[in-house]
Length: 410
Ligand code: NIG
Ligand code: FE
Image 1 (spheres, helix red, strand yellow):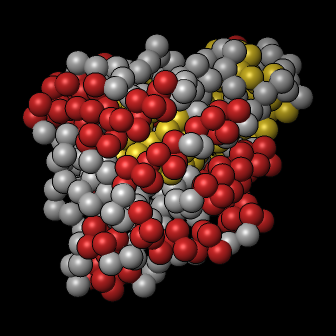
Image 2 (cartoon, rainbow, N blue to C red):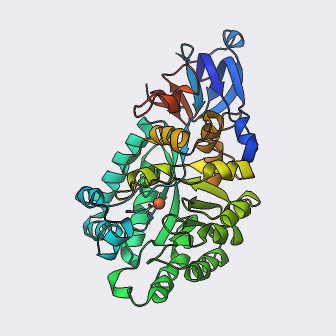
Image 3 (cartoon, rainbow, N blue to C red):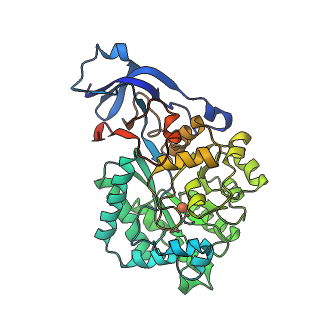
C-alpha cells in the first residue's frame, strides 16, 4: 500500500448507486473505527482500524479519530473570469435589483469587459489561484463554466484556460460552455442572432474537447424559454449534455424545460413552481441548488429544496462561485446555509456535496464516494462527526486533502 489512513473515527463512504433521490438522501453509509488503504492513486482497501495494523504501507496517516469523507464535488462555478465587482456591493445595499444592474450594462457585462481585456495567462493564473483555494476547502472536483466572453474568441479563450487549468492543477475540472450567459449590447435587438452565433462554436468545442456541457441563462431580460429550448436542442443534437440556469430570479419555467430536455441538471431553482417541483421529482434531472446566491443577492426566499427532496427529487448543492452573485469558494459555508435556510438534514447535505454533485456533472462513476477502485479523493476533517461541519459555520474545517492519492494539504 502507498498510504494507509488509520484510526478514522467516522468514515462517510457515500458509496451509493446515485443519483440518490428523495428520502434515500437520509441514509448515510457510515463506518466507525475504520481505515483506508491507497495504492497508485486509487482506493485499494477499506477495513477496520484493527485490520489496518497488519497492512504494510510506505506511509501512514493517523486520522486521530476524526471524520473522513470523500473530497467535496463542486458542480457549478464560473471559475474563469477577469476583474472583480466590489463596487456593486453599494448598489446591492441600495436594493438595486441584480437584473437592473445587468440591464444598465453592469453585472455580468462588466465582467465580460474585464475578461476580454485579460490575457490568457492572467486568466490562467487567476483560475489556478481560485482552484488552490477550493482545494484548501476540501473540494477535489470542480465544474467550470465559460460565459464572460460573449464573443467567439473570448469564449474559446475561457474554455482553453479551464482546460489548461485542469491539466496544471491537481483538481479535476469538468467544463461547461455558457456562451448564452447574457445578451451583449451589439445583439440587444437580436438575441436569436446571438444564440446562432454561439451555436456556431459547438463543432469546434466538441472537436477540441473544450466542454462536455452547454448551459444557458433562462431569465427575464436574458433568454426566453423558447429561445433556450431551441438553443439547447441544437447542443443536444451535437452530442452535448445540457444544463440550465433555471428559475433563479423570475419563475419562467426553466425547471420544467430542464426536465423536458432531459438536462443532466437544472441549476438555481430558487423560484421553481409547484408543477416544476413535481416534474423534477419524477425525472432524472438533478436539482443543483445554490443557496449562497440567494443569500448574497439579499433574497428573503430560498429554493424549496426541502419540498423537492420530500417529493422525491435528487438534489446537489454548490457555491455558484462567480464575481457577481456569489463570491465565495467556501462550499462548507454553503452547507451551513443549506441547513439553516433550506432546512436540509446533515445527511441530505452530505449527499448533495458528494455523490449527487458528481452525478450532476457526469462524474458519478469516479468522484463523490469512497469505494475500492475509485480515485483516492479524500478529506480528513478537524471534526468528530459529519454533523459538525454545517453546524460550526463560516470557517475551514479541513485537516488534510488527498487528491488521486497525493496529499495536497495537511
Ligand atoms: O449563476 N445567473 C447568472 N449567472 C451567474 C452570475 C454571474 C455574475 O453575476 O457574474 C449565477 O448567478
Ligand atoms: Fe451560475
